Length: 295
Image (cartoon, rainbow, N blue to C red; front, side, top):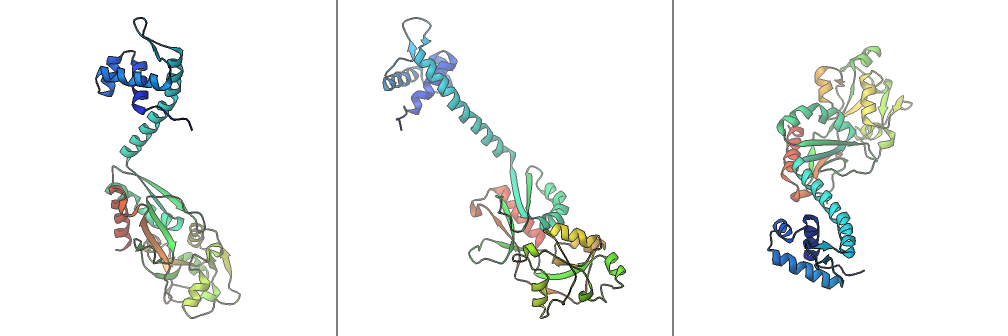
């Protein structure tokens, strides 16, 4: 790779060529005029050619000087554009939160108004993802799964109880209620594709010390959002993680089936992508989510 001239010489030449005078170039770079002249002379010596024709006044660029200026226009132009973008991003104060789609749709989105009121000067970007998808980068990262000993910086969110819920419409059609019901005679809404990550019906029955009913009718979905929407539409009974569907339980759109609740080691865990090096806004928003999810 060809050795490049000193950067100080290139910036001195670029400023002089754009302004047309050494005095103006010196003012832009906050140095003396003789210093600009020395830097350009050193650059010419390094390149082995004259960049300015000094035989007449005013001084004009040579062809070699014009060639170098054209090249510097492209290089310095790209640097200036990148610096402008970086400065704008720093001033924008954007924080990205990445979380599973179910938590985003049923827990986080209902709280966005509160979150925006708490951080009016921060632009908050939400990225949801389905189970099994590659994790996309976020400043605040919420994942679902088992606790990991190698991640001591993670904080568990919400509770650890998992219980079945259904819409009153579904229970009424089946002649059942939250107090009197039979899971073996109900349609179980499942997520088989996410079973390795999710606490689905087979593992839930196993935790209860029971076998999943033989011949149980199931409806399978690829996302928790679809599954919950089916439950709201009266298509069956689904499992609820403690805290995720509280909005529907409080309004009566869903009811919790009594007598069934199991504890799971799986859950939602929050961490900051940059850990202790995270910025002030990222730390504050992470702490806000933790507070809201642990009350």
